[in-house]
Length: 424
Image (tube, rainbow, N blue to C red):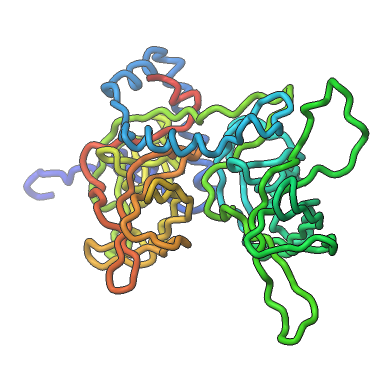
């Protein structure tokens, strides 16, 4: 130039670092995997060069106080006591039962089990005194809960009044919410509202050593209701309606034989971080950004809470940042518990619309959900049990989620157990 001034050379390194960080948020599996490998390599190299770096990074954040309201934790603990079957019923064999969380499956009526420990196949699952189903091993190596209502499931049962008026029959699952009564003993009169209970199938004579080896004998199945038959039918059709709807259960109790460790609560490590503003330039979406990422053990699935309230979950995580999908985003889904009138019911919380500060959700399948307190159901992928979500309110015939928290400021991210998150 004539004045002797030279054009400054552009500094490309900051731009390259920004692009490298953003690449971890691209929804392309190959790019995300390459980004994760690069992060792991960089983390390993820095740990070798500066061994104290990990400890410094972990201790830089002050200890995080418990983010679950103690009153909610106490209430859930009391309600969980109803899941365990009573020992007096004699189903325990060796008296070992573990409480396992449930999740909805892909197929209607399918129930998935979430447990960090191995789940024994072929064992009954109870909710109090009610038999829910049996654990079944699948070809993919997982163990799932097959409810009695699943099509093709059979259970020998009895109905009437125990010890006075008993009629044996075969309870058949046909995919509906009730069990069909088949091969009924016709010599005993049945009445609507009679209790139905399970009977163990015939087996070899029991010795003294196996005197308490009953499996499901005496477990409740439900109550008898009349089925719908065409007008003019000459026979009666009976159905068994369960006392508790399996689709609404949050947990079941499974018997664990010797050799299987009982499931413990999932170890989650809270980590204090900061939530910034919207991370996606789109007014129709509702995202936030955490100022920490994989280097702090924050991975996709981790729940993010503010003042004990769930505000969202991590969808993608990179080095030094994480993308959080908040409750206000349409389509947000979260397994939740509805607490009302001293009872607890599990359901899938799904956000269907957002109008300003109003969040509309799909109404749960409960008789009366208005005013129910909604908290999170526990999950091993990074969601503790008992985080407050809000309350359900009926407005203009729709279900709205109220009393929520804004996703901003000081937050807590719940990290699953791992080599990066085991530090306090």
